[in-house]
Length: 205
Image (cartoon, rainbow, N blue to C red; front, side, top):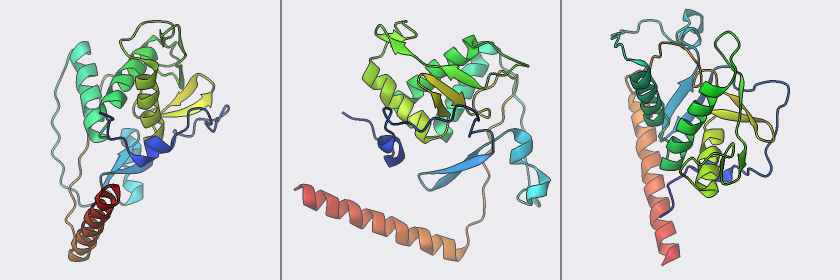
């Protein structure tokens, strides 16, 4: 059964990538919409900078939990997976890319890109327990959701908010009071989506 990939991931053509050989386009804070949720990825100072005006009058509850190295990576990967609603292939390839990133030579504790060559039936010639189609499907999702950006064939810029070799990470979920107008707008969108699904199902029959 095919995975429920987003339309943006399906639209990615790995044979026609728009390379950016000189500059990493993922350095600036960015936001994408996933299931009507806005998801932002940035360094902590960029996310909560008071100069933006977006964090004023916010009540915050901050809990700190210490983990060993293995648990830290596991919790980090699980948090990112849930936040970005990664499909199964995307989850598996994200873990692979994390492993590759850890092997990449660092400068000041950071690497700006990672090499992802698939040959001899595996990543970097190593058997990683998946076929090339699964790898490509997961890679497309990571590109669509701005985990990676194409630098050159086989080389990808990494999003510094999602790939780093630090010792702490924060997953921030902000709750905002929804206005009546926003509630009505979302109800209209949901009804339109339901109607579209009904029409699509009728067309298939």
